[in-house]
Picture (cartoon, rainbow, N blue to C red):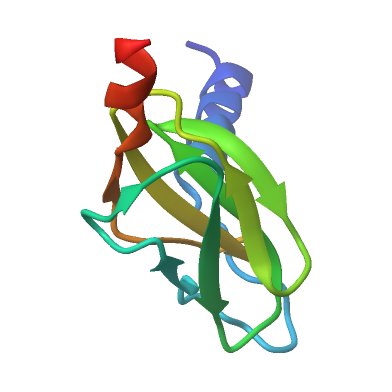
Length: 124
């Protein structure tokens, strides 16, 4: 290897391994605290429900995302963080994330909701 290739290799290696640092000013490296307030884990639901999420951080929350069965369901950037969801199956798993202005990502616990109306719909 010639010197130019070695220097290029080292430069690329440094870029790939470098840890992204927060911009100067008010550095925040901690992720937001995120919690699904309602429904609660194990709740039985019927019809359209409101999923309410709390997200707190020492810096500004940019947006909150709701995931249903590990697929992105929606994004909300305005307080209060509320999503309307109509369960289509017997059981769904919900999880939320929040991104702060420093690009830190916080995650809620995954919760399970049970669609009580699912058996009624299947019997028809």
